[in-house]
Length: 140
Figure 1 (tube, rainbow, N blue to C red):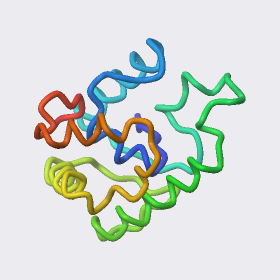
Figure 2: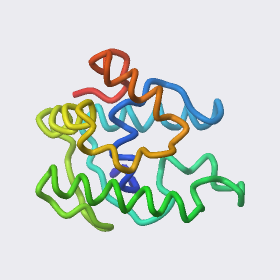
Figure 3: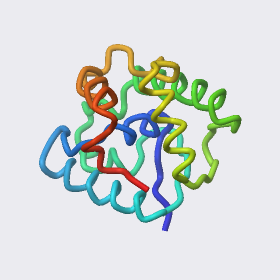
Figure 4: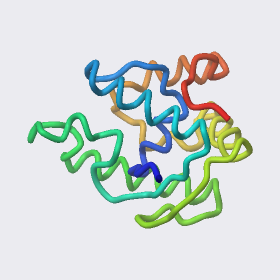
């Protein structure tokens, strides 16, 4: 199988520590984190993805907002530059240890965090990165 992710969730997975919008959301994200840690491939999608799934019954969920599409574009641009691969819908990629390390190093340095502006999880993610990603659920 393949984990379907929108571009900004490539950043979110770096610092995911088991916190989220609801118990259902967290349980779903925990399963996705385990799949990614086990080496499952990623497919980039436009719009709501596998992480968003528990929220999609709510027409007001942030997953549907234009601001999140803008966040996706900012994340895709930053990651395209950093990874030297065009982060567009349809791209399939493997999250190797070296790619994960490169992304985390860049995230901690702030060079790929343009998409994180005004995100409610910004401070938590900053703390996780500052701790060396000690409790992050996605690992290799």
